[in-house]
Length: 321
Image 1 (cartoon, rainbow, N blue to C red):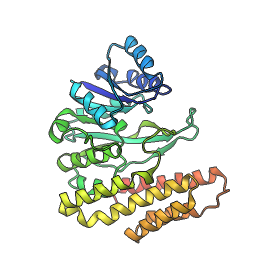
Image 2 (image 1 turned 90 degrees about the vertical axis):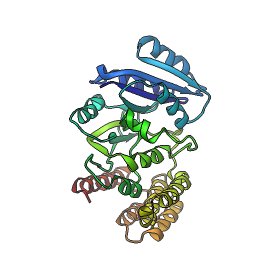
Image 3 (image 1 turned 135 degrees about the horizontal axis):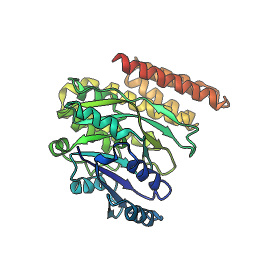
Image 4 (image 1 turned 90 degrees about the horizontal axis):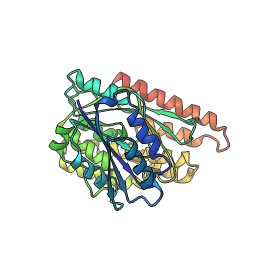
């Protein structure tokens, strides 16, 4: 089994070395055929750093684009990839050491899924002191309702955690280049329409939060999310009855994100909008509880509340509810 690792870099001089080294140092490194880095219009010192990495590691191949965005950058690399499997890694994230080993073992055991993924660790501090394990919905290769479940719950299956069969990409097509954000959700919806997914237990990726993240504001992604709701409710009529619940989850997550950034009023407005879409959603009321916590409350208490919330989600996923 050979793997083409596709990486994108846009002004990530500070992080790209750690990202590439996390690939090179994989326990399944022998399966990595090539590491294709797309330097997408970087204006910092990324070009020099990537060039030095290519000099040190012969599997590194560098492509250069003029700020075309993640969809176009990944698609360019996909067209150059020659491996049996394709894996993605954003230039500001890094992999757990045994990520590929765990995922390739799933494919090696006869799993028919087109895409294998896992949980991730969300962090911003260089020493990982604020690291938070984010539970992801657990899909199985034998699941018959992958599309409606993914449509309703909207991930988060992040690109940096994915390993996919080349034949799946050839079947469904590459990323939609009209999307500058939300392209991963649109891609996974098309994948779920024809293929199944397989979750691997444990966090596979460390996802870094910083001021330049495209997804740093979830409320800014609401138009994309609602647009996908409309498109897929029309494309697949059996999804139409899930549209309001899907939008409720989008507004709830965006509202909670605003609250986490101390934007209480905007967060509350978004949560009320979520309640209007789906008044029976328990998630919305949990977020309202977090919103109501005093602003001056010790951050450790607020963090403990979030940990309990994610623990409840993981139990929910394990129970299959």
